[in-house]
Length: 329
Image (spheres, rainbow, N blue to C red):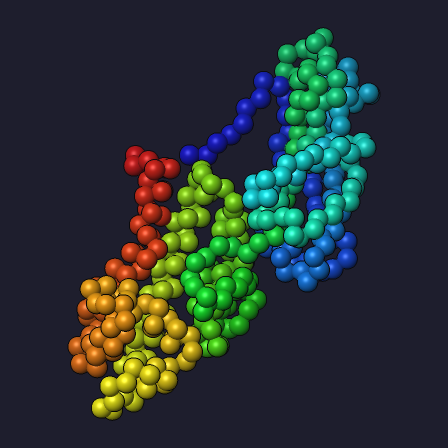
């Protein structure tokens, strides 16, 4: 269910144009226009906020008796939940520019900025339908964000996470231009690729909200990605073990030496999770012995693997959260 704001006086929602322009370095933007500050090498982020108001704005939200004086001012609000910081900056006039500076060490998550037109005086003589109190919100822009952190995803130390616009990337990613994520295991460590070109993907997955619909969608999406990524990586690792030249050797080290470093680390980490009934120290050798028998795929891939992932990350919480947020109607 969408939520709308209703005011007992005239307003112009999302009519003001707010644009953030980097002062020096070229800053990448996400699909929704957010500035990716975490991509900058510099610890200092300087931007210019450019604000434009439609010519008919004042006539729409002010009574004709106030068309000349315009008892309003423009305020730029700055809010960061993760940084626990909220501020506002008053501008001279209804349009124009102002400079903003941020130190990356002082900010976390997303900083949301919005331009707001507010009344500066009381006027109880105004007719019904017009705001008459100082501070009343008359018009505003859509929120624009500066992102100081990458998305949160808990796949482990041997996985890298990268945002890319699939539509303008390698050919194999272009074929998936409308997909949310992909996995690349061709390098030294696996890479989880998230599609920056998918509308709202970056905005939702980087949301710092602790509750509400966006937070539930974000969490459910993360759980889905986590489950699929681990399923793919674990399956690839188990198949690699089955294809090693084991011979009659019983040494775990000889088997693991044939694997890429990331697969060795993954296997040693997940073996106890895949064989929870075994002693932690014995789980790797027992698992290799099971693979050695040749009749391991059904039990490991279709039973133990999904069970281990769900137990490790509690991926069912994504479904439960959506049900709680949206109900079952």
